[in-house]
Each structure stands twice: as C-alpha cells, then as structure tokens.
Amino acid sequence: MSRSTSMRRTTLTAWRRRQGTAGATMATAAGPSSVATGAADTGLLRFYQRLGFRLARIERDAFTPAAGYPPGLTIDGIPLLDRVWLDRAL
Image (cartoon, rainbow, N blue to C red; front, side, top):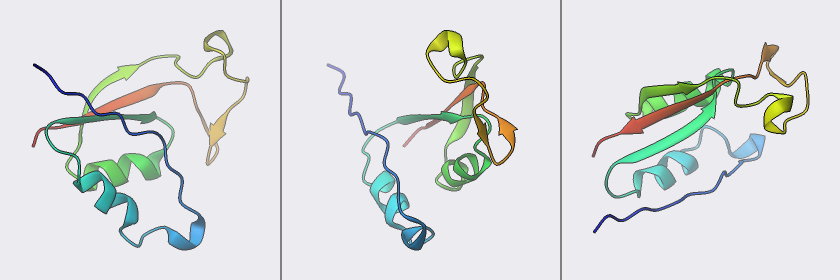
C-alpha cells in the first residue's frame, strides 16, 4: 500500500525568512518527496536544492492564460511560464 502526504503552499513573511522554519517543516517529511515551483522562482529552486531535492521534470506552459493564470506573470522580472518538479529520495 502506498502512502501519500500532501503539503499545501506556505508563505513566510519577510522577517521570518532564512530562519530555518520552512526547512525544518520539510525535514519532517517521511519517505520520498516531490515539490513543484515556477521555473522563474530562482529563490525557491535554491531553497529546495539545499534540502537535497533534484530536478525531475519540467511542465511547459503551466502558468499561461490557457491554464487559467493571468497574462504577464513574472518573478523578479523573469516571465513565469513553466512549472519545475523536483524530487528527493530519503
């Protein structure tokens, strides 16, 4: 029997970032884990890779108007188009 756990998106306010809260939460995950984020979000990509996640696949055009997102989304000036999946074997 397979067991799956879902963790919803959590956002920390600026004064709580870089204090280990999110990393500690992710460390409690038992078994293999996978996460997804926007390919344009370099901060989250660095965060997940520091926790041992590795790139697994790219879902092209996941954040387009055709997928229900508003046009012109950006993160730090980078167009948000693709979703990147990362996984970690424990």
